[in-house]
Length: 335
Length: 255
Image (cartoon, rainbow over all chains, first blue to last red; front, side, top):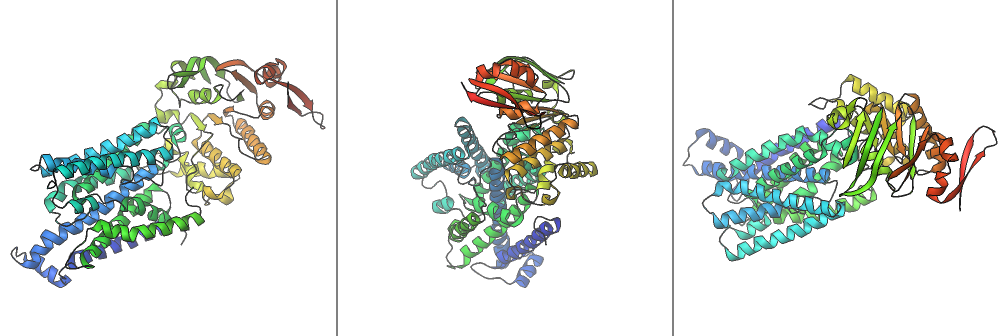
């Protein structure tokens, strides 16, 4: 099948959808205690809220699975948007400071307004947006070169990270599991915490899909895009809002999960190329699958002990990404 | 017809071009020449409405250019920047980008869009590369793909910023011949050119700029005879007739 042909793209999406469904079922059935699928179905049909299986499934496994799917999708898509809009393959919400901005604001809210857990998503979004704007304007003031964006992102990221560390040092009990928050993980996620973020993520994802062709035009460079009638400034601003919505919402319940936003868009590009109309959905699916898989491993490798998913992600993703870079250099994927 | 009145423009409050008054003629090739940093590209970008002037007026036909909505304007003017991102997409997809101003909300190309893209690709002789990635092409071929994109954009006025820079001599001449063909399609071409011989040989009009102002804007022959090129560039220019006894070329020596 010809790569980049319509049928190839459809096949990739179908394949990934099947993988995602398998992953979801595995994530619901496997954990520190393995529950057979038939047992799950029976328990859910009976709806006996006092049964142990029912409680594990509906209060632990399902929220957790949903969290992994949503966070993986949100971070990958936000990475894909950033890389395309900033025309920079190094950009990702973690590198450019979006994650740390969201992290700081979630920690601040948790430290000073512990009762207002529902505002965490909003706070994380604002934090992410402030960070992304900061990076954007610093980079613009320094000439908006590709290097300037990454460097200012690193600077903003470490500055905000220091602020987060300060808050966490002064108020160590602000976040329940400090290391889990800093590394990123899904243990203890509840439906309540998820629901609001989920709405944010779904809305942002669909807007990104609608604007994916305009994103292609933007990738031509400002002057060409402008002369084709695109409102470059407005569109770029909208994309930065989307990036903040996606990454901020994910951070609000998953902690500082970093790696997925950088590598998944790259892997997706190798699979389906640079057309954002196909790249965005593929990044979403692949991000969800990868995060589910990592979370599954996080739960089972040292069972009954659990390690934060961020650790697994970096263990798996790091070497894989280096492999891609070396391979990509041979194919001159990156300049 | 596009007409600039008292245009002053630049970047970050620094004036690069001052009080420019110029009218670009329909269906002709106008080349803007001048030393580095004299404001050629600034003039080009301002005329194409990519750079908002500090003051002055630009009229497109009987309309004020700033009052025309962006997408409508993109159906009238197209612009080829000098430095471009090289997107990692196929020739067909890039040329299809030229249809962007015409697409509806769903951004789905219609039959007419596809036909025009196909025709633009054929016009530029790119049929065999239609499904190739831009990355796999040479500099000259890439330039043709971009010109095909402008053709698909189907505008009467085309701005080109140094369309032949970085190309070898064969590709340069090929692109210049293509530009001549664009003129034969009744397009108005306004371009910045570095190579003075190319500019003088291929244009209907030459606009010589110096320090943000237009020194002279006239036919190549008149501009050559005015000796203003010699003064601005500090060279001695001469006109030579080639062995075929009809083609004239220009050579330049240091003073």
